[in-house]
Image (cartoon, rainbow, N blue to C red; front, side):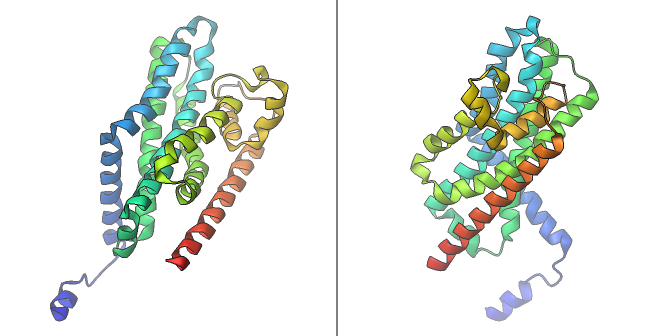
Length: 261
């Protein structure tokens, strides 16, 4: 049997072999999230619903122009935190993560599939908001601005993917949704996803620049000339530093948990 196993093992494992694993894992992960209605309907539905309530109803005063980038940021953050953070925490509690670790599948394929799936949802959210904004929200947007917004949202998914990995390592699966909402909703409000930071109370305006969500929002709003005074370079640097911090903390916790196992 051992000889047969050796004979049946792939003899030439190259880039194509790992690429097929990555593509298949990404496809199945995206389909799984899409079929999980509690995830797909909330992650896509909430930004769309809020835009219909606040953007379309205030289209004559140009509020929709602000909400398209704001709610796009909200969508990508929720997709990362719930799709990756909550998803891995649930798989960890069910023992599915242990099975994945014991399998010969590369670890990067497992994480990469979740990252790409959440990025896919982010693109869907941005596309839906742009379509609603242009057709019903009184939003004026060029093709270049739409492409720039999509690029910023995709790049912005990286730091919140890192944050989601840390959340997955420390949040219990049974209380995950509540804890994630306690993190995600206040950050979204203070960072200007819903309204300009200048309209918030003074102490919240002082607090906002310390949040990664604020820097993502400013990068998205800068495309339409609605950002707070500041340099885009500073925002990118803040997001880069936050990414490294989250990845480092997640890696430390993960290696310690493996050592105890």
